Length: 125
Image (cartoon, rainbow, N blue to C red; front, side, top):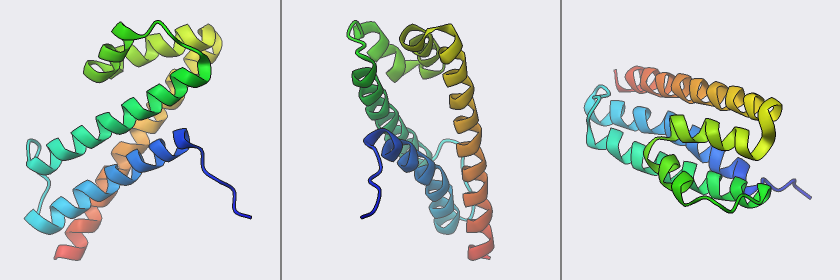
């Protein structure tokens, strides 16, 4: 029997896959990645949806109920709202650890995007 991936992990895997695939497809289609392209906006929208899905799953797991303002914050300013959320739901020690892991994940997705763009350039050449 295969181990089943949790929905939270699935959301992160999908965000990572999107970070790689979007620049790859754009580079193959257009020859390069443009900062304000339709591809970029589509990736941003999909990433926000996946992040919000992950947040709601995590919020339910941690029993965080007072979240109307936090919901808006995660949608509009995740870089500010998520560290606050992590400290509120996990305390200082585990919250800082979660912030560091989130930062590492953002760096990882950035590197995946660069790898996707590089591979698209190699395949398209």
